[in-house]
Length: 390
Image 1 (cartoon, rainbow, N blue to C red):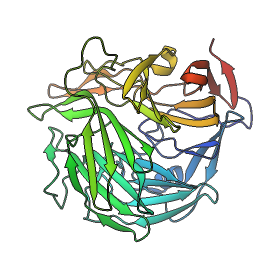
Image 2: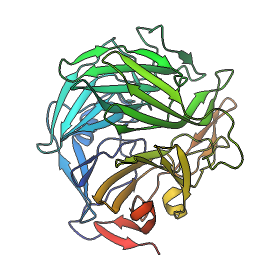
Image 3: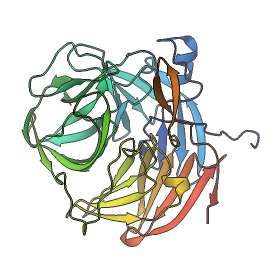
Image 4: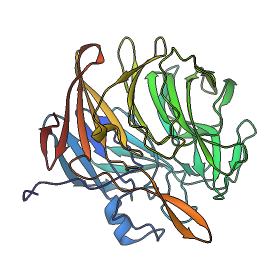
């Protein structure tokens, strides 16, 4: 590696939100994240830095943050943006069954952390769910949905909580946070809501509507996970009501293009007159990588497959970000993730899946979509430089 050039290392179970023309990357599962301890100076030092990728240069850089102490729920946190602020909710600590439910914001201009909502018993502590910023009647809300976590202090009657064999709880609990009053709201649900789900992808497509795809739901006996390929929409109809619709039932005609079941995939939305969801990778029900990529037209809810190299699609627990450089040019950025899982004996007849981090030169991949969402270029970004994979 060239002297003075920062190189991003392996990372998974993270988000890579876009603000302006930069991708920001905080926390995540990293090889040097202390997982055996709840808190330590080494852990706080690591989580007090944030990585930034500038689109126009292809360079990663690392920055020390300011303000309040950073969150400790570094793995599988919920994440979304509003203007220059990046919001983080919950996350997994890394040891035992330790989860969070605090809300923190990071200002991408000042590099300052602010704790908006401290940890409390108001909502379930969890990770591996989703969050978007929505608006109703001029008021902005953070909307949190689903995930896996510890046993909740408060059970909400309109949601489901299923205990897995790992003693963790899978849920479809939903929460609204009014960003003006900083008050929690437990919304009323109408329509056909998703079951308890984790490791799915959810993206906002309008100011008050989001689309959700795939994820892991409990099997019938609750002892294991089952990946799904359902599409749901959720819409904020008022400050207290979320309306859900299922776009796809359990059976799809053979003539219709539709992605196979998966979880631990990544998606991003391209906002235009006809919003498009881009989805890449993930793990299927056979515990193998899915190795494909798709576009979803959210006006007609039709999928179309796009061809990308396996170096891009062959991963799980990664992130996918997008930025519109011009009306006919969109950049996609795939960051990190893990390769195929290998099952290893952990004693007493039990086996657990273990995956290796994606390594250079494939940690960061840049894809250019042209007019009609065609693939123009696919490149890798390493040590601050961009190179062509073709």
